[in-house]
Length: 479
Image 1 (cartoon, helix red, strand yellow):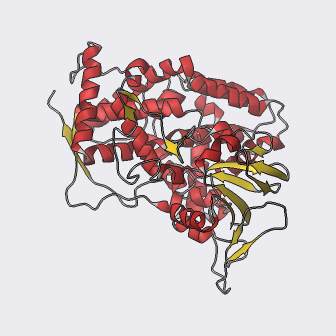
Image 2 (tube, helix red, strand yellow; image 1 turned 45 degrees about the horizontal axis):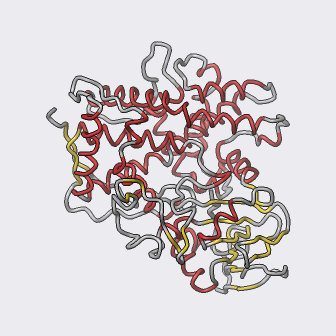
Image 3 (cartoon, one colour; image 1 turned 90 degrees about the vertical axis):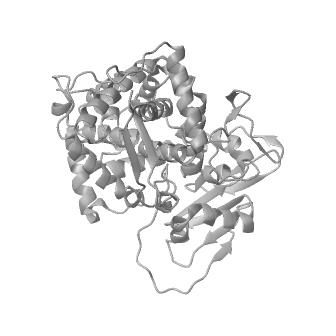
């Protein structure tokens, strides 16, 4: 996450300062003309363009004052492995724990004196990958089919499959009541998410406050106790949250709400962009559709309107062109930040010859969007190429900068300690969702629309949404 800003314009003269702060080998410091605010407004307006301009002026490493914090940007992707390995002096968890507690409304874990709680929570994420991914994938497939069949009959598409897969169903094994209301409140909360990460008090955001309270109340223990078929991952989190009486019911519910947001906030726009790009390129759409049908045929799966499609984890792994189309969509739309906080004053080594001075509490940031849009790494980086990550019938992993192979070349899910632990589950559910759409529907973009562009207002927070609504036409295929 990256803090954004919410400010009143102050009558100061326009002046940008390029300074050193008096510590040896510190990178150039870029300060704006508004005290405290710094360059936050320019960053929020166009983060990628702003950082590209600063890199051109000051090189691969520079510090920017944004919303009262000193943020040192490392723009050379060849330095990323060194930064990511600096776990002792550059910490992620303290920053994320503090930010999450403010945004989602629970007491910070560090203030609750729960020994080993954070480590236990971190270990629970193992239930989202490896062998545990197979039952999650199977459950997600069944829930997608359930939602598809029920909602198609009412001619209305709703979210719900991810919720059902993680949190389970009601005691009668049906869908939860109030899902429409839950979705609407989640959308209202998410609209104000950038302001909350900027430390704007939620009391000033009435709609977000009301929505958050309703979302948290949905996960109170007495309600969740009536749900069945929960994922092993959520059951384990329940056990950990219920283990210590210090944690209030509201705190427990807020943790579950935070997990719900994390499971859908970036997955939904990723699905949109992948579908949008596929429909924009007939060649890509045809290749992916043919691949899906080939996988079903090879598995001797009979595809018909009255039989549920089942795509296993192994089958999803074989969808090479769908996978590369998703990766290419992530490359074009991801604007996440990899953040670390300096735990002490120290000299940060970038490579064998270079190092820079970093002060305690400074924020060190890797900005993968610059990597993703680098024409030296990706030819014509603004163009969607569905097969960009395929080479000789296999996944392509060889990408170069200055003649050197990059260890990190695609980073929509973070890196190291900040890497999304649910990324494998997320990719699988995106594949499943897109497969069902392409199998059951004839889809096309409505003509006469302008090309979809990214909304930069959520820079630093994950996958960017489209700046305007995009209209699709769809109808059931004759199967």
